[in-house]
Image (cartoon, rainbow, N blue to C red; front, side):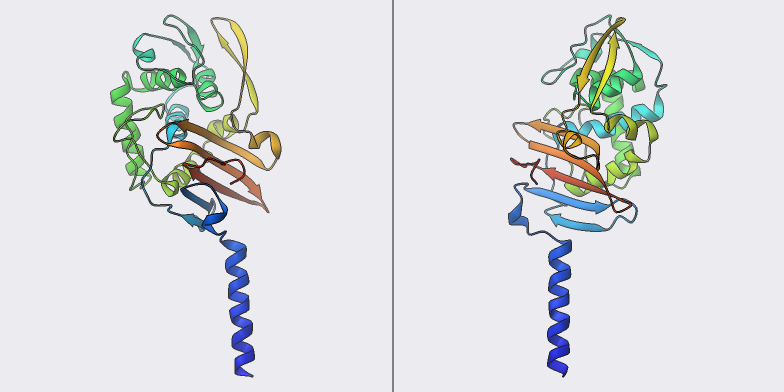
Length: 252
């Protein structure tokens, strides 16, 4: 009788483990985590505390700070300082352009505009360097123990890194901000630069595939590989999933 009970319990444990934890070899991501936002419970872990570059998922922090520090409807005049070292993915801002804070946030989160991220940084702190210091203050406040920022955009830098777990915790905080949460879930948005409207589209393909996806941010550089921070509504819970350095992130 005892052996039967023991065998039953072992089967139960095995089934529970399979249902909660996927096998790491089933995904392409070198670093990954899934957490329940409400409880912080880790549902899946694949090298979740290993440091890695995180590309444009960095903009989660940049845009969260902007949502907290700036007025969404205020107009920003673009300066040359804002465009310094702005390369790669852009919304093609030029010095002298006028654009609202809200549209800069949309440009950074949806179109992953590095110029938009830099503009937000200078609008908040007066310089990119001072803003990066603020980003690291937020990281300390959120207890992101393995995170250090050097850019507001996520372009590669030697001491710019985080972990899958830290990015999930950061995202949990960001989704508590109503403005951030609304923008990161948009499939597309109209932004206005110098009174000229244009439509931008979210790089996150998962938003188009299932209505359960509610964001959050994509990223890519040659160093970091493909990075993706996602959030899903699942059985009245919000599940946050981070994959870093993943060649097949959508399927992951």
